[in-house]
Amino acid sequence: MASPEQDLAPVLDKDGVRLTVDDTLATVTLTNPAKRNAQSPALWRALAEAGRLLPGSVRVVVLRGEGKSFSAGLDRQMFTPEGIPGEPSFIELARRDDAGLDATIAEYQEAFTWWRRTDVVSIAAVQGHAIGAGFQLALGCDLRVVADDVQFAMRETSLGLVPDLTGTHPLVGLVGYARALEICATGRFVGAEEAVSSGLANLAVPAAELDGAVRDLAAALLAAPRDAVVETKALLRGAVDRTYDEQRAAERAAQARRLRDLAGLGE
Image (tube, rainbow, N blue to C red; front, side, top):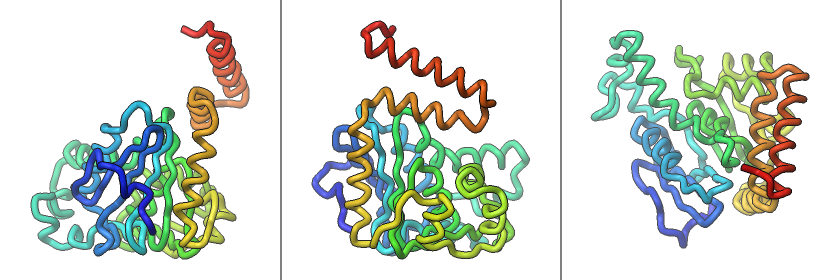
């Protein structure tokens, strides 16, 4: 994929993650195509840092991966007895007490959570393999545009693990419990056609058109007034936890804020 950020100075560029900002649009790129953008704790820390460094001017964030694969999941070295130098191995993690293990996994999850902030809309541009942690990272975003060669798979269960990088909640919300269970328990691949038909992806395009399709979607999102998009995203994100009447009340409150703001009467 051609990089849409090639002329921009990076705000962050380390541990397989690069963040660039072009006014209201930010791009986060996974930059280790030789390893199919395999993920490690260092990469997760860099992704979390990218979220903290995001300027307030940014309205849309695009997440992409260099090379033929979006992300093939965990770095296989994490599964070896020695693990990745400088990082806790799985065996070391297992030996920690409940609080220590919980805190470590919570730290890892931070890389996957900030994409759903109400002040930005995030788009994952996904090509090739998006496996395990790669699948969950794409699920962390609000929207997914996929290439026609995409291959999603949740392989944690086949390794004796569970998906623990925040992917289970959005997956069930997108495709329903039964299909989510079947995808996770079997570890099978989900291609572009099924991804779109099941609601997992918003749009599928030929691989050569992926960057262009994402740019068009970003432009359409940026065309609407920012505060209206922020309020709408907050409404939709909260809808699943509200009753019908509670959602009606939330709509009224949000619209009141918008009307007063447009009339120049906002706080």
